[in-house]
Image (cartoon, rainbow, N blue to C red; front, side):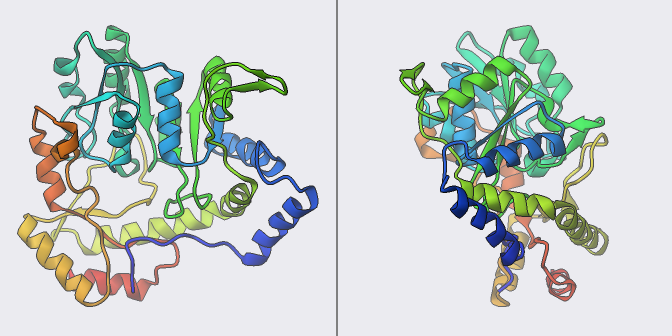
Length: 353
């Protein structure tokens, strides 16, 4: 089978060497040595000030909402993985969908301001497939209306924008380090912020609000990453340049050989594609379903990322339709991409399409 993606597994002897350190220390979780080492290395690698490792990407978003004390309505995108929206609803916040740009697939900043009400507390855009949002325009709107900005950057590991990490924009950016991501820690995620006070607050939130051996400073939860996950992260980070290079080759092969047959996402001119995903648009949903069925007949499993458009979810009771998001969601398919995808396997996918 050729899946849409596959977790990168480092050399098992290398991973075992990190695990041996865990056994020697007896420290399995709760801000262990390997976790602190990984946080420091990621901060340096990504060029960010404060990076707090957490148990998964969904908790990273929920911690951001809690830390910024959001209330009421939050303007976000309908074109994303469901976690972007479900975490808002889970925290008692109301998602208000601003439709997307048909070329970048990101939230269209021109659609934000008409949706702002006295109940709006924040904007939660997504760097879709790692493609940077219109960060300057979003900042201008947020500053004008005194709104917080939280970027769901789950796909944007190692993405730069105008010479610096895209994670440096907004009040907070969140990352997912799920097993299928470009960089992973089996499960995991991170909260990134330039605000030292906010970082300190988030570190309290991830450990039940415990501020000392005998003191609890605030309400909190258990969002800690453990040492075995940190060990995997250290192994993968050691090999991240090789992983990125291989994914870049795969993306370039798709782009070259499928040009004219499908439409590709328009990437920001101030950034470079990190190869995290390989999304393509077909001329119609009918054509997409035909191609998807043929691929599956040969045990090739693409995915309809992102489908359905989140403004169609019944439990949200959305009053305003996001027509562009619905149209893009009906025609988009993510093709197989992972570092050990063989060239002949990829060419088989391309030939079948």
